[in-house]
Figure 1 (cartoon, one colour):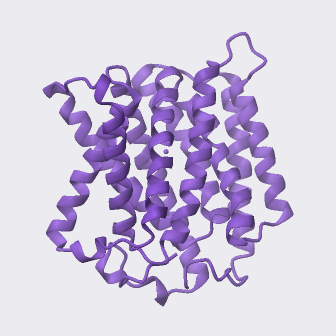
Figure 2: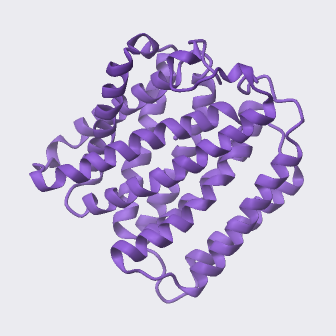
Length: 321
């Protein structure tokens, strides 16, 4: 489970034609489409992270995830000769986002190792609510009362998924790790809208992957394990899915406010159900299915409510139309 259009020409990144040529409504819907693509690819990546976490520590897995994605990104940049767009501004904000990324990814890997993918996602789904709440004071976004009510009901669905009153609650340490990862993810997502004022999509993704990968690698030196040849295909899959997902989620938050694109992440629970069943033969409980239905229904309503207000002018801090 990452976000203002930069001053770099958009034609030098992966987005074409320029976002400035589109209406605010079209930009918002393109942001939603990018988020859907990101959710799917990140679900594939998270499945490989869970596999790798049974052999390596959380920080080593975080390092391998970022550096393997960076390899794919560098190959594309080299082929397109897009090195000039990697120029970065606001270095302190990049460093702060990198620190958030290290904690977020390490905590998420720990949680997904101790719980099923669906359980981890059910806690991580608090991130859209946190982003919506934080976007009000940080970016001046306007969120309707109907949307607030729908998202709160969706969080009640998350409680149903967790079923804390049952005899077998999720491990406390893993649940706290997933909650901490959600908070860091929300803060990181909101920083992208500020970074986008002077950084291209490629620059934002490149420096985040580099800082998190190097930082997590340095922190895991004492527990680093050799990587056998049999695990290299999994690393390649992780890297490709992570690179694509990172680009799409960054593009989503550049094109539309968090209150519009963040609720789309609720669809990740569907992929978690499928992956848990295919790879680990874990079938969802009745409470998991009921809670997912509540979360998905409220998420769809939030998207519909956002579409009703799509003709409202965007806040100046939002990406230009």
